[in-house]
Length: 252
Length: 244
Image (cartoon, rainbow over the protein chains, first blue to last red):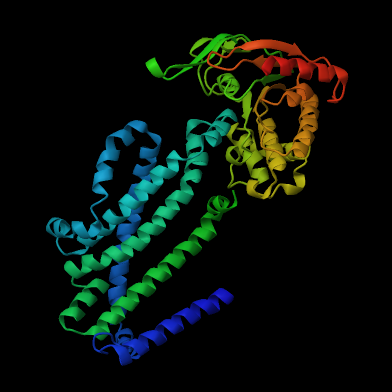
């Protein structure tokens, strides 16, 4: 209750400061005040324009994020479990992971065009390395004692892997996914600014060309709200489904 | 085990941990391996469990050489928080032992009840390991180990992390379980009093490199034992002189 009130208070104060700065201190054209932004937003919501952009950006993030996570978890488990695979691939991964999705935009456009595939690829790229490194770390750090204890109770190698190692790694994997989701929401924007004809990033780009600062602010606000909502949804889903794997970290 | 040797590392970094270890454990015996830190007693226990292989010599269990871990020899760890599955409740941890041992499902509830009852955790069956005290976690680990129905319990300083009072209670508890189930127990410790309280025989180990069992001391005193008993005190003093 108290945190909720503080949260709302913080937002209200921020909007008040924004209103004050943009009308009194700065040029309202460069920083449109919140009321102007709100007025701009209403027709965009009413005619569904904003939702079309949101939907297309979300679909891109969704496809890239889900495929990126799936591939990264599979490979991450192999890397964490099989020393030879790790020795062979780790150097390559350690080099490639410095290529941010933004750095990959030019080549992605040449490879895949400005259609959906290039965006899927870029989000996949960004997600993949974050989740991969976390998964590998989680699998490697599954306590040896826990595995040995299961082993001498009679667990087979497969049972140790599925019932001990993977659950032990779950908190690492989930944390990686959460970071990767935030990163996906960040990297979809440059991808759409540089190579798209729809999506929030395209809305930003188009409004910038037309010097519509009010519409730029609508797009920026939308990004903030989307990222926030999806992070909360992710946390709620994890709490619902995986809390027994997550909570013990805080307790022990 | 006969003439067991264990080396770690290679060439210049080679370290001889154990050398010439001869040891025979009889069925139903409670044997303590006693020695200072770093004497290789945990290594010896890991070799008995099958987690590690001896570099030389032979280790047999019931006439057959030990190859890898087997459920007839269950290891019991000091860090119960790490050894238990923290995402499973007390009863689910015991169930895990039954599941991996392919016990028919119909027998699960009764078996779980039996062992949780034996360790006095029946009221706490829904709790997760993190919600249990250190002593309760160790009792849960005992219940889980017993549910695997092993012949031998290998215990690596199991009560080392508990406070003195809880540890004393756990001693009484372990002896009670041991007398009721007739399991063979190999118990590693660096605490002389603990060894004198529990053991049928105490194997005193020397400091490495090349640790060996320097003395085997039988403790033929009735249980429960009293540290103030002059016979127990005499054994304590004798071991102390050997070690210090």
